[in-house]
Image 1 (cartoon, one colour):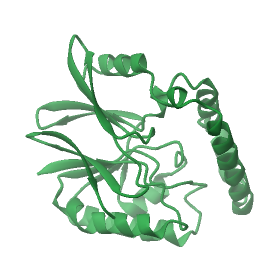
Image 2 (cartoon, rainbow, N blue to C red; image 1 turned 90 degrees about the horizontal axis):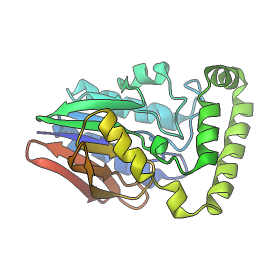
Image 3 (cartoon, rainbow, N blue to C red; image 1 turned 30 degrees about the vertical axis):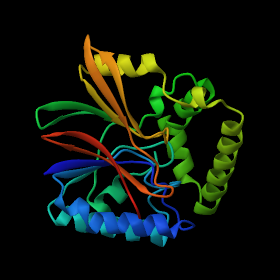
Image 4 (cartoon, rainbow, N blue to C red; image 1 turned 120 degrees about the horizontal axis):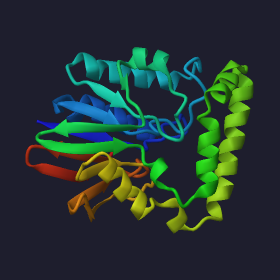
Length: 240
């Protein structure tokens, strides 16, 4: 048995192949897991649990089916779906987690997160993140009519795309010291995260011992997951 981790699917109606691949994953390999953890950006955008988008209901039903089969599913918010709330969690059967969580898996302590908080060199993004995570701003946004929220979200995505086009890849990647600081804060030798879309397993030193950072890939042209079992931690790719 194994515990599976995925992130950065960016599900949207415009990408039906990714949705189909995720549904096959939920009905296939995920059914054999001890648990499934989704580390953010399951959706390309989220403007509220009251959005009647049929895709959301389709995904909620598929995850619910996985949970009812005996595989618990956990979710950490990403930068694209940080407004995903308790209503969708109930519909899907997912359990919402805080932005950082330490797991004890097969005698191995693992720190999990979305990963955007590690990109500390991107001062502009961190300032934006702090603003949109302000509770009163979220409450005000969610009180707006759906059509206005859609316009705001589209404008924000366009602005983010334009801003990222002028940033270096190094700035948008994690800060090495931020990684070490997080692992030493939680006293772990393993960290799993997404966000950067740069799948790899990196070796480093933390807590005066060998440590490892597993980065999940985005589901653009293939699926990506990290599989943790008694025998080790493995980054895997698979076709949709």
